[in-house]
Picture (cartoon, rainbow, N blue to C red):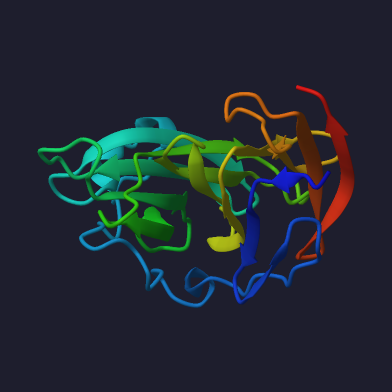
Length: 233
């Protein structure tokens, strides 16, 4: 009997493929050649001028004017300390509001001490993002923290888009979307672990017959499948 697997789409900058397939390495972010990335959410500040540690940087100073901070996370990268901050624009409907997330890094090059290196806006649309969260861990195996970001759109299948940002370079190195699944850092081997519900015909949505667990590792800029196993919940 054919299993119905929850959709998994892996998109790395410039390339896409199914779960478990090889994908192309991401191209460097504009932050590598320009003082500021070119795709920051509208209204994002371009610098924070105090040379202080990440714990002393007010998250409210890193988001657009009138936006409200919904989460912030600190990281240690090979290029310096980093901060990831998520925000929303207040509105009448908490389930339909503009949101965004930005990664900032500490610089010691004579310019502004703190500058954004990556950002993404999630404006209200047909499938508005209901929450933005991040997990900080090294998932590329270079010993430098990355951000594993979830933009959750909700629905009965807990749908959302997962992204990985290399905080040292400000590069998007992984992106995937799907429902009935989670994408988290994996410790051994270093990489990502994707857990997906596997349904047989007749399964209630609450109760999939099995769960498929896939571990991906970054092999020089290409995501490769390390292990796949299917178990009962």
